[in-house]
Image (cartoon, rainbow, N blue to C red; front, side):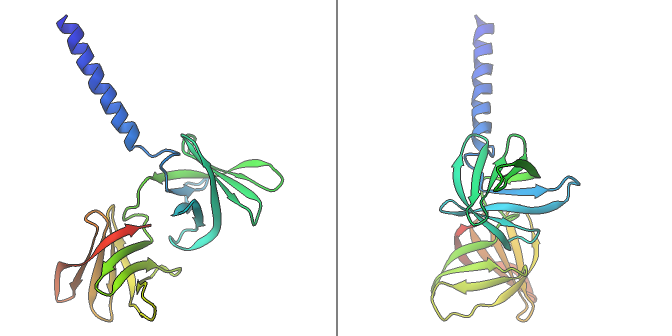
Length: 212
């Protein structure tokens, strides 16, 4: 009887662990971003969900849109996209870890390998953060040239530009050399932190409301 109880306890723990691991894994139902490589394992770009079932394909520079797509459907393993302007379809298959392309001729081919998939925005993939400021809603946004700009939703605001210095799992680090200041976009604490050349101790600047 003791052996049976011990077995049932271990089985329940294994089932709970498996359920939690499954819930936390990236799949077709929750994926929002995939990085792609070619047959030589070289990074070639990514597909990113921009909300409202809109997706973009970006090249090797994050934030630089090459093509736009509409999400048609999802299942347990894949996301299905369509570019009506070019009459092509894309399948992001997280089971085979492949990106499949179907052209106007209906021929389906393997396009890229999926090297990494994400179900939430972190410091490695973010290209924009929205924040709350005293002047109203604001943002830091990555530009096509790889630099960043601080802006406000309020019309007429002219923001500063920043050079991206580094990224890690949770944060993006920016610098405005003209003013000798540094910005940390911390998506873990959801705070924008500021420091200066003469004092590198970060101080709170803004709260982050959302990121993409």
